[in-house]
Amino acid sequence: MTLPSRKRVLLEVPVASAEDALAAQAGGADRLELNAALALGGLTPSLGTLIEVRAAVRLPLLVMVRPRSGGFAYSAADFRVMQRDADLALQERQAASDREETCSPARTAYNRDCRTRRPLGRRQESGPDFSNPRSHP
Image 1 (cartoon, rainbow, N blue to C red):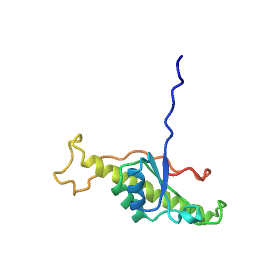
Image 2 (cartoon, rainbow, N blue to C red; image 1 turned 135 degrees about the horizontal axis):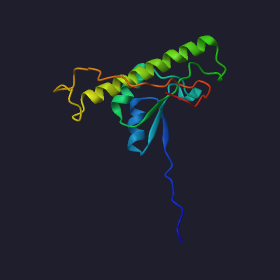
Image 3 (cartoon, rainbow, N blue to C red; image 1 turned 90 degrees about the vertical axis):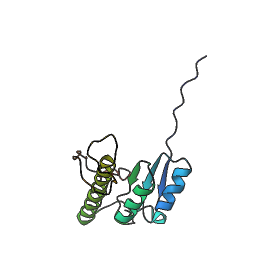
Image 4 (cartoon, one colour; image 1 turned 30 degrees about the vertical axis):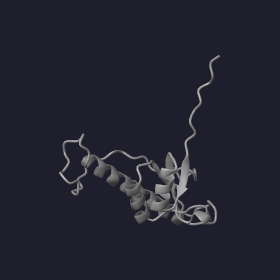
């Protein structure tokens, strides 16, 4: 008798700080969802929080893009804020990726102490899908 293969469940943990992210990683999280104001259902975190969480953990990270509490009916102004927030998060992801590649021994263009940040090429990123509130960059 052959038993069906069991797929492992992906554990995604909502976090609001670098400390939360470290605890989630230590507890076995597979992926993090970074939010601010979790008591309000989650809002877009600050860029500073995003940078600190990326520096603290090595897990895949989703970033909440929600400009305010109070539902998911957004005005044109809300969408402009959401687009700007998503663009900033994507720019930070690219900058983090460039720093990692620059410091990778597998790459030939890295400096000795990895303090000089030098992009090694840009990747095409698809934009966020705002039609789905669970779709994050």
